[in-house]
Length: 541
Image (cartoon, rainbow, N blue to C red; front, side, top):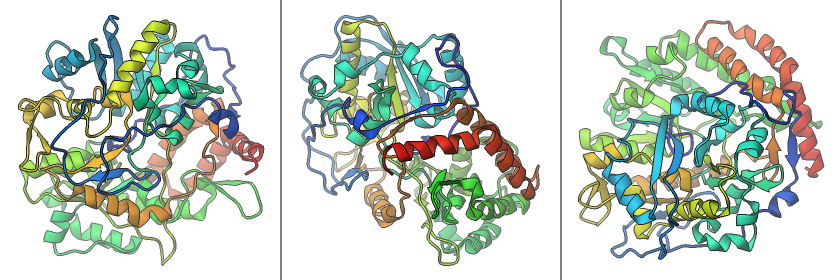
């Protein structure tokens, strides 16, 4: 599941356009100042039901090492108000669950909601294509979940927001949010990103930890081979050589380039230059070094052929099968895969590789409090219907310790999950088949990590990893500033990524990075630099 909640390699999109929007194709973008953002946000009010065993720290979620014996009703009034079925669309990275009418999990949740939610789950790896077509046709569902990484790649996305989605400001600004207490309990840092054109337009799905990626490895198989975790890029390369055995259908690596950049100390996009202004990552020697290193993994045959030949191999399946032993993914992928695979192979042990720098240098960890998803409401439904939809989203955001949380996350006891000896839910095969985060991804939630019987060590391992490495998190230069990116900037992201992909796979020489950088800067990169520099200057940074 994604970068931050484990949905895998991010789907990408080129310069999509929206017919009929007001801005010209050459939109210069805009940056809403931090104080203007704050003026339209919901008033935060905690809605904690249980005290955590491991308190959260900043963007690190709270941890629970035991499952509560007694649950509470968080929502005492049925959200449904007699409206028709609610159409929703959200991404999903896995087998498609049965649809409404053939799915007992949907029936159970909709029974509690008092209104039918009719989810459309779309393949997360090609979600951009579906989203592009939908925005272009101006045909959106009642509730639309959009991953954060797609937003920046859609040219004129802010025009789509204004043309197609409801302005939620008057419904949620300030104390008005108290009507929806579990939406008001979502972190303020997540709401800050949900503003377009100075108005609140989406409900955020907060990150369950600010790190964008981890480098996961099959620790069980690495330990079995008698090998140790690397402490440098050179050791990572040597580990890859020892683990790769094409004759047995085993390769060391899947996709790792984003994590390699962090090991080499390269920023995610921009960093401030000592003499003023911003430097793009392509201009940083650390980026070239990371590119050269990763290209060598490809050229020396250490990367699985499916990854070499495609934009997005099914690396989760390859990892489960032991066909690749290291790949990058969001930390949210961890618990679900560990729990699922431990039933197949008791010794299965998925762990993030310890982070390291180059020659004793400092590594950089990418991330921010940007939400994983944004949920938009279709424009023009009327105040009563908007209220009904927000009541449904409020139900979907009910906190851990509530019956609503358990039903949303696990389904019905005895059908979709059983209980371990400690009372924690363990999904059944039907649960794994019918649940696809149909309500989770649209509703947001206060992030928590909860021990389960099939992943007894996960919560401690997860939070330990964050607490050990949080000091390496790259500072977000633009935190609290809402950026609506220039169209030319959005248009060049995907074509440039395609060129870099060709270099990594050996279809273009490393030396072509200079030409790629030149083309990038000429086609919108310099315009983007000026835009980002002005945004910082306007906010006194």
